[in-house]
Length: 120
Image (tube, rainbow, N blue to C red; front, top):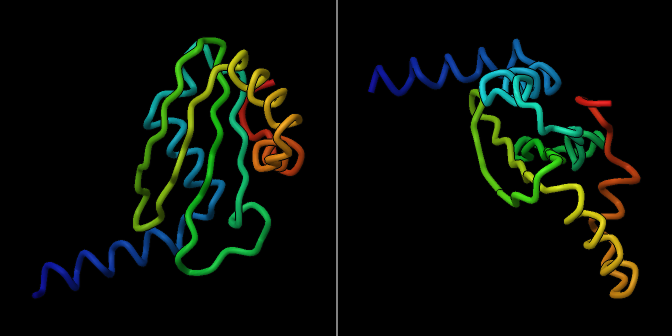
């Protein structure tokens, strides 16, 4: 029981010390996105970005690459969940064209309202 309590206190301390942008930078570094040559940009979006987060909200990142790899993942920094999607730029262009036809605006919203936090 003591280990759980100590672990919980450590997670609370990490969350208190690290702000969202610190957690994102830690994620970028530990996942070595800052060392990859195929990263076009990383977009921060979702409730944490838009200041509508609750205590259960996660951090959402869209990682745009020069290759055609599509990948989704989840990592934890402290007890904060980071959900990320890695998508190729060409695939995003095709998706945007499809979205315009289907009127599914989620990707358009991410690109319009998200913030480029890494890349050019």
